[in-house]
Image: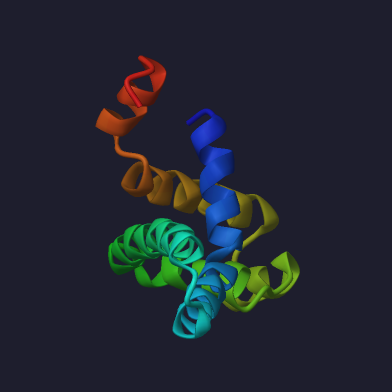
Length: 125
């Protein structure tokens, strides 16, 4: 498995999971108090993009094994240090990084399926 641009994009999405949830919440609050229609339309567009990311991540989370979920939760939700996670999972450093890499590739394949990757590559998107 070779790291590619989708790997990096997926890792950033995983790192921003909590932040994305907060952005959706803040946009909802902003929409409640704004009367400006143009501004509201832009906020709704941004909110929709964030909600799609969260839905895709939820699909990926539901397909994770217990070990993968523990890694995801520890690393991206609770922001634990790798050494603490290695101890929690009882794995070596090399195994930890291999598990992390596999997790990111698995999530990446769900967020960016092959058909969408192909569209990006052929500039149809």
